[in-house]
Amino acid sequence: MTQHSAAPATTAGPTTAASTGWWRDAVIYQVYPRSFADSNGDGMGDLEGVRGRLPYLRDLGVDAVWLSPFYASPQADAGYDVADYRAIDPMFGTLMDADALIRDAHGLGLRIIVDVVPNHSSDQCEWFKRAIGDGPASPLRDRYHFREGKGENGELPPNDWESVFGGPAWTRVADGAWYLHLFAPEQPDLNWENQAVADEFRSILRFWLDMGVDGFRVDVAHGLVKAPGLPDLGSTDQLRLLGNDVMPFFDQDGVHEIYRSWRTILDEYPGERIAVAEAWTPTVQRTANYVRPDELHQAFNFQYLATHWDAAELREVIDVSLAAMLPVGAPATWVLSNHDVTRHTTRFGNPPAGTQIRTPGDRGLGLRRARAATLLMLALPGSAYLYQGEELGLPDVTDLPDEVRQDPSFFRAAGQDGFRDGCRVPIPWTAEGPSYGFGSGGSWLPQPADWGALSVEAQTGDRGSTLELYRGALALRRELPGLGAGESVDWVPGTPDGVLAFTRPGFHCTVNTTGRPVRLPAPGRMVLASTEVAVEEGEFELPADSTVWWSV
Ligand code: GLC
Image (cartoon, rainbow, N blue to C red; front, side):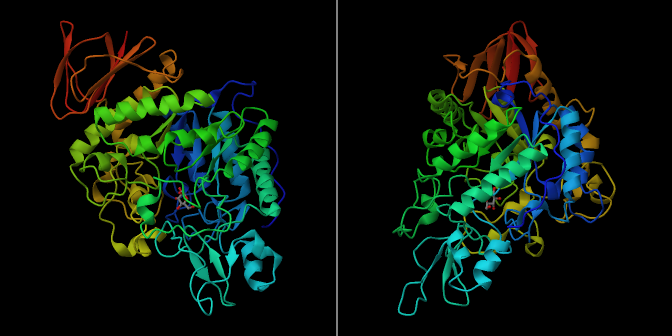
């Protein structure tokens, strides 16, 4: 990996006072840089584009921005294949642009979290290129997982592991050796037993901390350590096991030592720098292992993301999530959408069927439920993650022609993902104009013809719009004392089937996950609702698929 000198050190986050615990109830907005805003009209979003839109994010009311990778990369997996961890890909800008972005964000009171991708590098990373180019005896091969194949002439992969994107997790190089890649062949897995790998990533963390970032989102945090000897899985049904079982390549206990070492680095810097784990584990209890006091700060709650629009299931996952975090003292986190799953507006408009949905479903129903789901999420104690465009109620684009798709898993049969381009379409800023204000040119994925009506411009000032609902909710979350704070919710007993009601200090939330309205006593003064609600004489009708916030 290439060394660069860091750009001039920037200031740390907006408040540098010790131990503010800012992250415990933070709302963190995910920017997918290629699809957020394009400053130079090349059809691809960039860092200058993000910088220009920071005031929008400040006004939206989020606390921090997480940027998906913008590092030098051949883009085999939209930047999650990093060739140089200390350089910006020219299509996104320069290190000076990153520096300006971090400074401006801090000036506006926003924190910046960047992605770090430690499970694998790009096959175009210097290390891997030399590991191949220098031949079988290259010591750099030990920084990856090279093995001899099985079979008479080594023609079979070394074990039975499959890539998450489909097909074998092994690729053979010209001299006959095989290397491991849990994702695309262009993403060789790094060997974390090798000290040089561990040292390199500690140095990469410091590089970005010196640049002033407030934290890291750790990509595939559960994958870094593989079971000794890389044993066969012994199952041909790997996709079903993924996320439901501890695998020989996922969620191995050895990963925690790495995060303990990272935590000491984060703690050396002022201003509470944090890390959040992308760790797909079988249970929230195992997720809690990543956020023990001497490890990372947060972990995504994918069990919550995968929960259907169903009161009983939601209550269960909320209780289990909060209970799992209590013993380790970490805040619960909540997330409904990201760049890897079908947007929740579309998931909720379809019959429940996992997180990769290929049909538009009932858009009206999906949006109604999505708005209600957001108000539920933002009323829970802990930290919430938003994915760009969800504040506009954007649906997934389910009818992208195959020839424009770029998700590598789409091209590999039987991967668990495959249709992730649908949530990555550049977002609309203006009602008209080229790429609806995404840039002055086109957009790298085509935008649907009706997206002007969903643009920031079209929704701003419209009381009933999803954008104004998010703005209102985020403003109230700041105003109502302690809405994001605390570790528990108090469920109100005796609610009808399909209805949830809970209280927080000074606050009451009612949620109807059914398709029919329910009459209930009004618990206080209504302060926000996901749809029109009339309160009369101490009673109100909670509409189908809705959430109401009350001040009590
Ligand atoms: C993570 C990323 C995903 C990427 C994969 C491989 O799951 O979120 O987008 O494809 O890691 O890096």
